[in-house]
Image 1 (cartoon, rainbow, N blue to C red):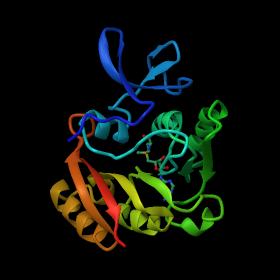
Image 2 (cartoon, rainbow, N blue to C red):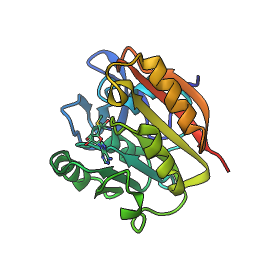
Image 3 (cartoon, protein in one colour):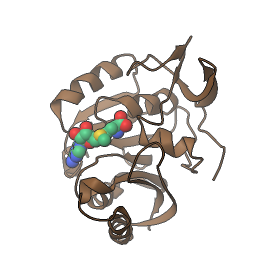
Length: 214
Ligand code: SAM
């Protein structure tokens, strides 16, 4: 557990309540206060990981590079691009990707990529080598495999910040059994440094911070 937030992420008051916040144009109807906008942990797994005090080891700043897998319409990745440097946002569904493009209009460091995160070779020519963090929220079957296939982009001292949705693997199984399988598969390429269930923000999700094995 840590209270350390990346540079560019602050706890600020909105309507009398303290909330995580970044500086940027609003994207999903979140409350704003001048240039700041609230980061809703109920809408964002990475936001929940920060809210729960997980040590995600993001520094923030122009030099920090991020590969974000499962960007959807840009709710979370827009906050990341507010505080980090080059942020590559992979999403394979055309409809949310349209909103992602809108979120990128005011964010010159956000690079939307309409691509399948299971086929990293299709975006390897665009994403720079040795990114500082891979953030993954694909909510699809085979979440550990996606993380392993994208390990190639991560710097040796980089971090994987993974949200695992149990029901995306198997709706009928006990989430803890699903998480055990994900841990086992992930061990092929990563060492888990910290993990935490994301309740009350997201039911049956596990947040994982991991480092790549050499
Ligand atoms: N991370 C988003 C946020 O917090 O704003 C929400 C992501 S949503 C839970 C999962 C997204 O992953 C969906 O938009 C889905 O289309 C996308 N996705 C699932 N499998 C994918 C894949 N193989 N490649 C790229 N995107 C994928």
